[in-house]
Length: 276
Ligand code: C2E
Ligand code: CA
Ligand code: CA
Ligand code: CA
Image (tube, rainbow, N blue to C red; front, side, top):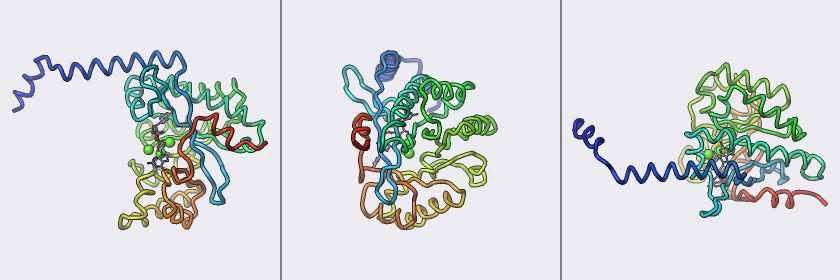
């Protein structure tokens, strides 16, 4: 069977070729869209237990000339494997910082923290901290209103390098949150090493609390772990009143999910939360 598998590789496979063509067409589209600034920011609000908005998470969309608005599930993966995420991510960061600077003069928006997702491959760039600081300086955005969301995959490589970069940015006021917590493989002792400010409880734990046995206990454990480490705990993917009640009982610091609001265009976010 092994030999047959190898032999078939020598034949022209139209389906595989079509997939390759589609991928490279999409890569070209992404490249073009990066040049033309076609990644509008959407933003999903986060709320405190008292219902007041405390911040938002920037979520990218791709304004595709033919396909319309495309969600990140369809392009972030390819952007990462092609390295285009480095440019796309910097554009998102730049746009987010322009908002933060503008918000710093607007009642209702000035105190909000804006979270921006950062891929592991962005963090791996040697000049990542300098580029972030350059964007902050150029836009005049307050660094302490910017939170960079990392996933555990960012901690899988050179730990000392990651810690050094985070510490450098942290010394300028930039915040870090650990995204999708519980889905990766970080050990607890490991977590303490990183200068994090917040931990986001992954949606999978939140969605299970209402029906899966022991899921409540797991969610509870994650929340108390975050608190023990001195981190803010943000629950994401809150969809039902029941989930919200459960999480509130365990005293999360902030809540994000469809129960409150889906991600909206950032201009709509601004209009909604600014105070006249
Ligand atoms: P994420 O960082 O975990 O973002 C949360 C995702 O959950 C968002 O999907 C959001 O729309 C969705 N969501 C929010 N509330 C709920 C809810 O109550 N129920 C459910 N079922 N889903 C909810 P979205 O916008 O499609 O983004 C998907 C992923 O794409 C993000 O997951 C993030 O990993 C990635 N992504 C988005 N923007 C960026 C970016 O600027 N840079 C990078 N590197 N990745 C990004
Ligand atoms: Ca995120
Ligand atoms: Ca997440
Ligand atoms: Ca996720």
